[in-house]
Image (cartoon, rainbow, N blue to C red):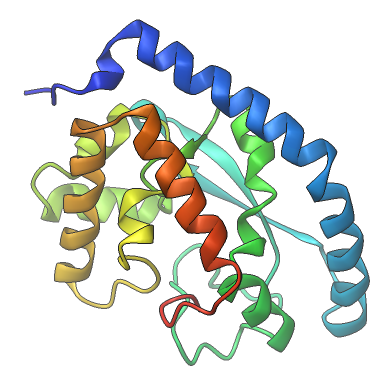
Length: 207
């Protein structure tokens, strides 16, 4: 059975999409160029190589898309199969800063502008994770009824980072489904403001 969500209404979907386009355009044309210059310089000095990390993730209605992030790890062959952990030796010192301030996610505003993502929604997971957790968690696939987000309700409530145990992902899914069922424009604004605030202090689960 499909979940009844305010986003089932066309007007709400249009409102959310209009906000996504306007917000992402403003960010990409103002804040992002300055941030990009800083990241380019520090990345070149500390971990030469590709600036961006691009990975296939599962999006709306199960479609895969190329999710863009600033690279935070040394080049490795496990990026698509192994989740980052607290003591992950692949993450550089600069990479930890980007992750803890959520700045590594900012290139995803391009994904938002292209329509693959929304500013707020369930975080997109690796294709392997989607396949695995769809079998293990009841209702997991309902997360795919809306576009994935740069940030989300589960993230601002502490359910982010490594999912070492099945219960970790179950809790994340629980909050994602609550968001889908209780969506409002005001809720999106609240999540955005709370995410922005988190950039100024280090979340212990951001690694």
